[in-house]
Length: 263
Image (cartoon, rainbow, N blue to C red; front, top):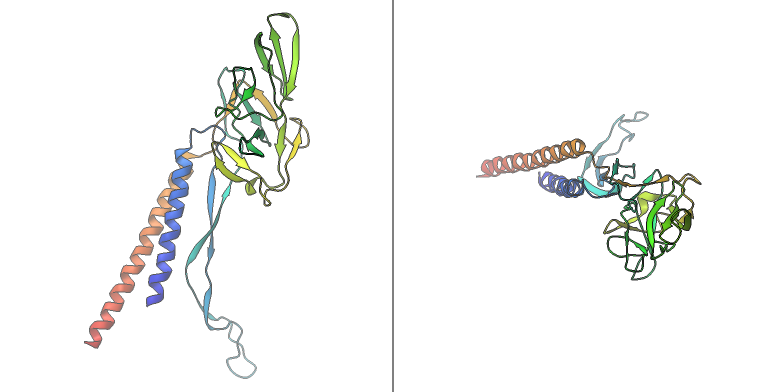
């Protein structure tokens, strides 16, 4: 009887994590480049009261055993990197990735970070940075007299300057980074991911090559959160939580009946 209390408690804890994960997905439904995550479950260890296939009588084996589980645990949450809807912004410095890949960002604390958020801005020195001021890698600096800028689908950055109003000049190229296992990246906040042993080694390539996507200037990638799916997940988590509390209540009532018999 006591086992049911602890087993149901593991289910309640698991559903709380599901709700936390769903809330985070919904909270970021308007975050550029955000990727939704899904909670994965595993059942816990089993107590074997009768081993499947054990001998019942000489030459005979029982076809099934008797094993009681101890509940569930959250094994992790898997991030899905399906491409979100591209949203037109009209800003030439907004760049969306149409396919696989990440923009590489220099981390002020050291090393590199990676993002799908292509909402780039300019510093006073005309350098391309993220909204937090982190430099794009490789660094791209525009001339001070830049009149207009355009980004090709292959990442080529060209400008028109006041000194050469009829000639487009290439000033750099955006590169994309791909990983063998993007789901293994560590989410760092600020729309940034960090490389981990699970993600594999980063490979920098030209957009459109080695399986990476093309880049689209004047667009931002929206989140890939499906609101209806998240609402369904929320309802399922709520119902599963209720069922586990019901199991605890029933177990408590049965235990109370047993105590009354003793009296």
